[in-house]
Amino acid sequence: MRRVLSVVLFVIGGWILVSGSMIAWMDVGQSSGMDVAMIAIFWAVSAPFLLLGMWASPGRRLRELGLTVLIAAAVGVAIPLMMLLMLNDPTFLRRMPPGQKLPQFKFSVLTGVVNLIIGAAVGWLLYSRGTNAPREAVD
Image (tube, rainbow, N blue to C red; front, top):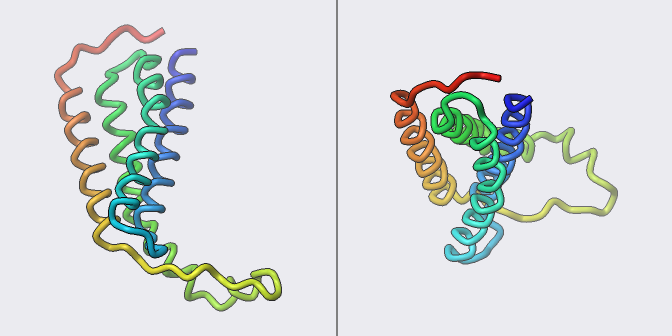
């Protein structure tokens, strides 16, 4: 039961991190400070889920937390490509409600890349620190 709970909490926390990564890639005209604040909010909102998932995990806790953050960073690599494909697809634009325009935004490459580097570094650090920890008994 603990394993299921930890997986569910890790998935929720990872999903929030991926959402923050998507926000990091978008530039809607706000300042750099606002970009950093929005990313920090997503990291802060995901922290309770990730920490509770780590607490509930019967295995190598730091390693599983690091793996979750690494997976979120890996998905964050594909986000700008998906956004670019979606915005350049004429069939997507035809599915918009009549009279509605897409919001005007640009890609914030610097913020997106910095967010991915920090996420990958934190994930790798946690993942590598969890390798030497003794494995606890699984329920």
